[in-house]
Image 1: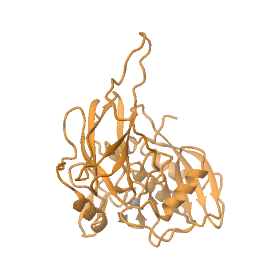
Image 2 (image 1 turned 90 degrees about the vertical axis):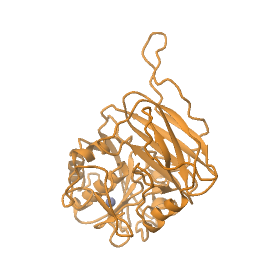
Image 3 (image 1 turned 135 degrees about the horizontal axis):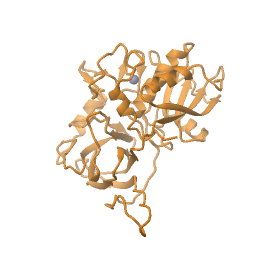
Image 4 (image 1 turned 30 degrees about the horizontal axis):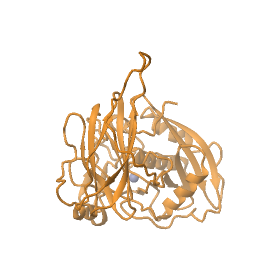
Length: 365
Ligand SMILES: [Zn+2]
């Protein structure tokens, strides 16, 4: 997933193993005639895969006023994971692949050979080694439907197990994005008011998103200030970028998304995201984006905004697979590659703003 000087990639989420099954419960209930109990907006369950690498179905209740459904699958690092099926209360199946057979060959071809990072079926998803993340909706014509939903998970190998977490963020108008700015360097410190921050804030303001910086810090002697290698289409759990994300995650003290500004990335790479989208889980080893430092503050701001937008769920306007096939983003109003943030510019369209503001990483303050 490479375009211009930008490359993105993902990484794995840390393993949080829970083994409660996904219960089907009423989303809101009154108690003692008083105020309603807040609906449960997080579910976690362990799943097992059959001989075709397909899990049993998981049911969960989508509460009213939910802005998005985020699914995080934490599985074995050596295997690709994705959704095999996904149905909300209207009964419409959104993936639409045959759950009675294996999809290993197609998953591995799309990832390792074509490097498109796509999954067979109707749902636009980014299969991932280890930890997989999907956020729905990812296009402005999609809506979340309250009531009972079900999903199945698929992986590129028979049997085995994974943990599935479902986060259903409320539709509360959340527009605040918290970032930690972490300079990873052998040279200069990051100033408390970095020169790129003004332009970064301007770019996200196009989507009515306010950037709040929780921490600004400089890390030295990490041995990871120059990242020399990366993998397509996304980073693995064993990559240097993920090693750095683990180190930074253990250093920062807030849940803000970690933006790691390094001295160097591989040639031709201005930045990379550890997820498209990334897991909305600060404990994850795929939690963060990396950007190469540079003298031009506006350029650094653009790359931070681009990679962070990947992490929140935006695709490139156009991706080119290894075969030369083009993969267009699912957002209809991203028509201008010259000016768009997810191509060569800094603009965000209303459709992209809709997708960004579905992210569970946004908060109300
Ligand atoms: Zn990119």
